[in-house]
Image (cartoon, rainbow, N blue to C red; front, side, top):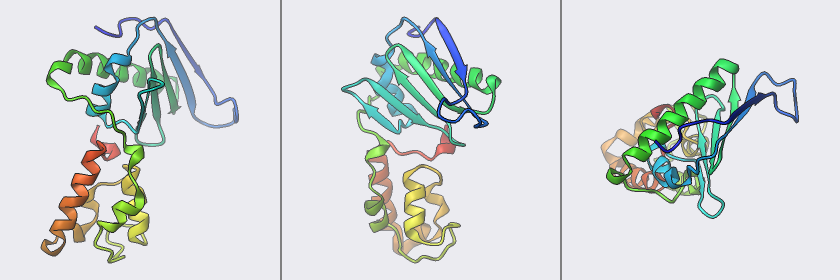
Length: 184
């Protein structure tokens, strides 16, 4: 087990605005979990992976973020203390499970943060049909980049005449390890 014991878990309101209704938390430990980062990045679709500084940022649904460092885990956006503890337990379990399976996984050193909205836009049907719930294909492209929606949310992409674009878009997104936020 890579991450066995949490030494300290500090839960607090954001220092910049203590009136916010969310909590942040920092867990510290002695273990160096950085060897797991490329595998966690591959399995959980890390938003940003900085190999040089050994930091992996995971973007979750509802404005939650988890940042992994070699000796600490930072959690942003928990609703309450119970959720902060649940998020820590979840990511600790993910780290240990993924690291245990690392011999069967392909590490990934790229991150979703490298996705370009304009590249996504070029691969969309450009109908501005609003069937996805967004006013324009540009707005859909931005939401897609951020993982807030999936490819299935654009009905024209499933049409035969746009199949080539859909395939290229899927390949582009997958090259960065893209995942919709609700795919965890």
